[in-house]
Image (tube, rainbow, N blue to C red; front, side):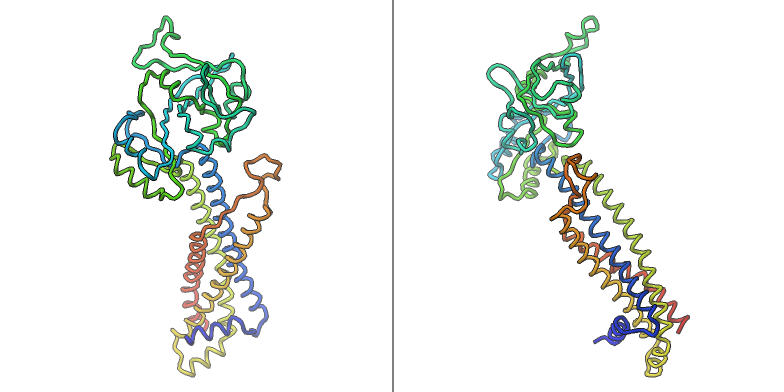
Length: 408
């Protein structure tokens, strides 16, 4: 066994001359453990929120989305697009078209985003899981076209879930000048009716702006024939999404962009990653402060073991070997603190997942979830363990070398 490590281990667990040193060593280890626990729990809560947001978008956003890198629309009859939809890994392929529009219900108006979708949109996403109301997801029948609105937009227009009066839709005519004498003549107009349901993604950008409409209805308003904004894909369960995304990008070339769900909501997830990083840096700072307790306990231990050090010098030990003994002592405190903190942090995360110990705003259904969501990622646990060891080892290196020379 390494001799300095052996002596350090004996010093860590043996009784000191002064009981205060044992207490301070315990406190320093607890400080490292608590900082480690805080890092594990905080990062896991951020992961939980990220997974929760991703699950909300899953019900609305496609697994893969193909759009053009420049411009708004492209021809859906492009042979390359047809080849993508014919891939064996693709289970559902649907065309979508998005455009800003103005809608009016009685005396209320709102600027919205119309998303024209095909009849197989239900197969593409889990839209049924976010629908509310007494009707069903329906885009059209033999007589009228239906619009499925976000829940906040329903509140803005004051139309209710199952409105009876038609919703008027206005879109400016393409390649036409505004007639100042009769501005209304510069717009294409049509009507939408309610299928008796609304959707709630719990994201303001969707719930307050989007209306799902038939693709043919929106094409007619825009004077389009085969143009689309995107091709949206759902892959088969056994398909490798990352590999398929890369393959489709190679098939289509630089003129197209292929995005997965996270890339479609890049701004949202980037903000969450930045918040997680900032929290991690703050916790590292707290961990560094906690490590000052380790330095204090080591300085007292060095004073307590002066006689032992003299004995070791008499046996031939040099300054480097003696410094290594106390370095190992500080590292052992950091190591046991890290292990204890990770175990306690994982236990607390499990209890939160299982029983929801800490609620959001006292519960009562005000939020999307009643308690803080938690998701433990193995990589985060490894990152916390490495961080604690690195900070603990570095924080005691210079103080031990300095104190060993001055006090011994």
